Image 1 (spheres, helix red, strand yellow):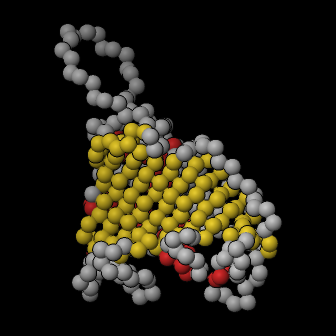
Image 2 (cartoon, helix red, strand yellow):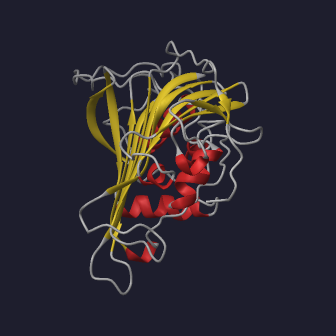
Image 3 (spheres, rainbow, N blue to C red):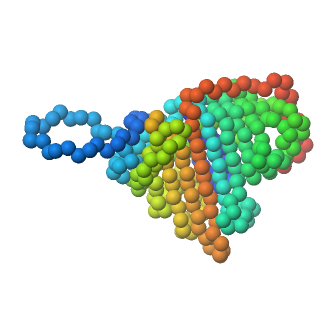
Amino acid sequence: MTILSRHIAAVLLGAVLLVACGGGGAAAPTPAPPTATPRPTATSRPTATPAPTATPAPTATASSSGAADAIRAGLASSGTSDTYRLELSLAVSGSFGEGAPATPAGEKTTLIGVSGEIDGENSHTVLKGLLAAFLGVDPEKGAEFISVDGTTYLRGPVPMLGATDDAWYELPAGQQSPVTGFSSNQITGSIAAEDVDLSGFKPAGFEQLDGQRCAVFVGDRETTVSLFQRLGEQGVTSPVPVEEIDQAETRFYICEDGRLHRLTIDISGTPEGQTEPSAFSLLLRLYDFDGDVTITAPANAKPLPQPTSTP
């Protein structure tokens, strides 16, 4: 399983973040679920040096190095499941330059929203937001895609793609949905790499998520900027220039199953020559790992007409 596919990267972060395909190193061991800090006990008399014991798994009261280990292990562990469900959204406000969508400061617009389920190379997803509107689809309803065994299907009507009826269409060979080939080692692999400095993340307590107790690790502005600067070497860049970032925060949620279940990145800043701030918020949710996910090709799908012009 992977968090962002090449195609999501090309559509989503190609529009805003420009995500490149990242490759992770060897997977770190899955951390044990966080445990409560043991009560103090009386100091015992000196004894012979005991045999070495295993280092305890990091908890939310661990040091920064322990937080980094827990994050890296959670990122790696999230790629060990073939089936899972996901939510991905990118909301923006303000102006990001000529040709980019602009919204009033403080009023965020969903540039892209993806929800669905993954079973290996097969996927069933719905694409919403401004990107769906560009395809001639209601941004709240979205465009529905199914990819099975290398073939992608689109549910119409999606006027800009030639799917004019309320029916399923089979895309021509070589054409894929924005989420075909989803693989979690794209974004997670880039962040989990051993040469990425995660030491600035701090434990920030626990939250309930997906029926589990999840440790939260927070990175402040300096840590988030540093992360983007490092990932910039791999093509992952912030839409707000580093020198113009006023506020930034990254949060990882590592749950009792040892996996990353949620990632949020919030960045805002005032671009040069402007008086109003611009901001973007990225949310990634992964859940129902190893769940009962079955994806089948739609019946009676008809060939998608070849467009007479390129939109």
